Image (cartoon, rainbow, N blue to C red; front, side):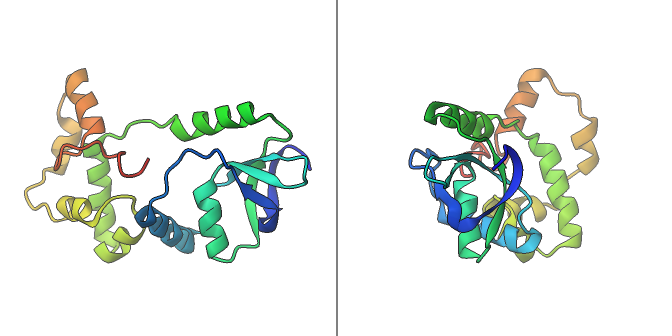
Length: 176
């Protein structure tokens, strides 16, 4: 098969035995609900094995969910025949090169979304706890305009980007 984007039959895909991402049942359910709602939006990344199978370099949890949902083939990016070390490097690069969120802007968007979608619908697919979401959506004293008009120092902005304003935890801790 040529390198690049392709469709691969699900029975030709195997999970990477070296995958370092942990399982999380709650996130798996949210991922399943997201895929049920939107389809497979994100491709998985694979490499060709000598056996004729394809090892999942990035997307092992998506593979589990897509199998569970009965998909027969998966949108994939085939890296071709590469070494274990190259596959592992790409897995880390693609999994861990994530930009921090601006929590104020994120909360503003969640508030906007809550005007169109019910809380129960939002909580099914968003990678946040119901408690966190309800804390944002139920705020009555929130001043949305102030999120975009306040000038913040670099240190204040960096702290705001990584920490939940309600509990003080890094908002990525549960989703990593």
